[in-house]
Image 1: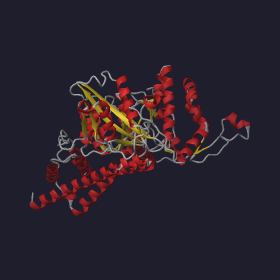
Image 2: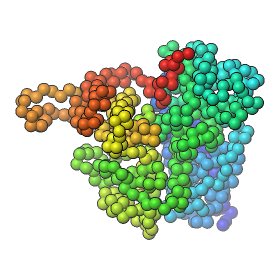
Image 3: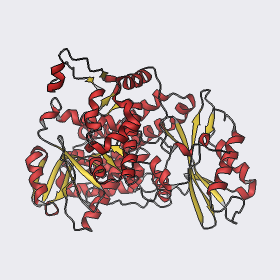
Image 4: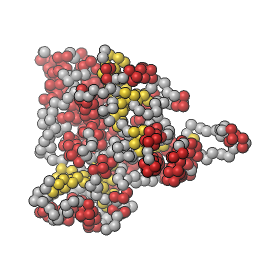
Length: 581
C-alpha cells in the first residue's frame, strides 16, 4: 500500500469521526436545552425539539457521505483499503468517550457507500472493538450523597436543589416530608436504620420528557439496593413540586416503556448512563435503554447484534405471527425472541383504498416523532436485512414471496428483505379477549378505552380501532401498533349521523349520508367497539362517551386552544396528591 493511499485512508477515517463528533455535539446541545424549555414551560418547543433531534443523525450521515464522495475517491477502495480504514478508525477511538456510538456511525456511513457483500467484521463493526467499562472514570455520570454526614432530611433537600432549576419550589420542606414519609411506609428497612455504607447515587442529568423532569437514582444501604425515580412537575405559576417517588421496578419499566417518547438527558458517556439504567431496569435490553434516551442508531446496532447472537444460539424457525393477517403488513416472528418483523405488502386489501406504500412509511415516521403517551409501540426501521433461508418455515417463505415479492430477494442461502420494521411482540388484543375471564376482560376493555383517550389527548386519531390492531404487553397494558390510518386528531371532522329521510334506508342497512375522506362518525364505532356480546357491557360502562361526536370535538377544541393534557406514565394512585400524609 502506497504512502499516498495510507494518507488518504487516514483522512477518510478522520472525516468520518469528524462527522460523528459534529452530530454528537449538536445532539448534546439540543438535549441540554431541555432544562430551559422545561423551566419556561414551553411545551410546544419541547415537542418541536424532540421531533428535530430524531433527524439529526441522518442529516450528519448524508453530509459525511457527500464529503467522502466528492473529496476522496472512496468508491474505488479495495478490500485491503477497507480493512486499513477500519484499523485507522479504531486508533482514533482510543480514549474516546462515545466509542460504540462512533462505531455505529462508521457502519452507517460505510453501508451508505458500499455493497452489502462487504458487510462483515473485517470491514465494519459487526462486533464492537471497544470496551465500555470505566469510560466515565474521569467524568462520572452520577454523584454520591452520604446522609450519615449531613442527615437524611438535609440530603434529600440537597438532591432536589442540586439541578439548579431556575424555578423555585412551591414547598420544598413539604416535598421532603412527603418523600421521607413514603419511604418509611414502603421500604423494608427504614432510613434511620442505616448501614455503615448507606449512600444515595443520583444521575447527574435530569431526564426531561413532555411536561416532567425526572430525578433518577438508587439508595444503597448495606446489601439493600433500592432504585427510585422522582418526577418533578410545575403548577400553574411555574413553581416546582415533587409529584411522587417511585420504588417499584414495574413502574420504572413503564416510564422507560417502548411505547413512550424519548427522554432528553445530557450525558457525555452514554454507555455509562445506559449501564446505570440497566441495573435498575432488569427487563430492559441495552437496545431499549439507548432508544429511551434518544440514541436510536445505537439502539438498532445493539438490537441487531443481540438478534444475530440469538439466531446463532437457537434452533426454532421464523414463522408467520399468530393472529389475523394484516391488510397492509406481512408479519412474522421467531417464537424464542420477543419481537415481530413487519414487511409492507405489495398490494393492500381493498378496504385500504387510497393508502400507498409511501403513506405507510410516512405514518410510521409520524408516530416515531410524536409523543406516544405509552400507547403506541416504537418501531425500528431497517434496510437490506439478510436472514438465513433455512430458519424460515415454508409457509412463511411462500407468504413472503406471495405478498411482498417487491421487497424480497434470495441470495444463495439468504433471504434479503429490503425494508422492514421491528417491534416488541405483544399478544393481539382480540386473542387476549377470546381467552380472558370476566375480570381480565373488564380490566383490558377499561385499558383499551384509556389507550384511545390518551392517544386522543396527544392529538392522535388511531383510525382503525379494531381490537386486532392493539396488543397486550406483559404488564397487561393495551398498546396500539397498526399505523397505516393514523392521523392528527385536529385533521378529522367529527360528525353526527344525520337523520334518514327514509325510514326504510335504516332498515335495509343502506348509507343515506355522504362522507368526505376526513369525516368521522363516532356513532359508527359501536359496531366494532361492541362487536362481541361479552365486550359490550364493560365498554359501555367505562367508555360510552367515545360514541359521542361531542367528546371528540371537545378534545379537538382543547388541542387547538393550546391545552396539553397531563398523561402520567405511572399510576395516579402513586401521586402524592392522592395519598394521605
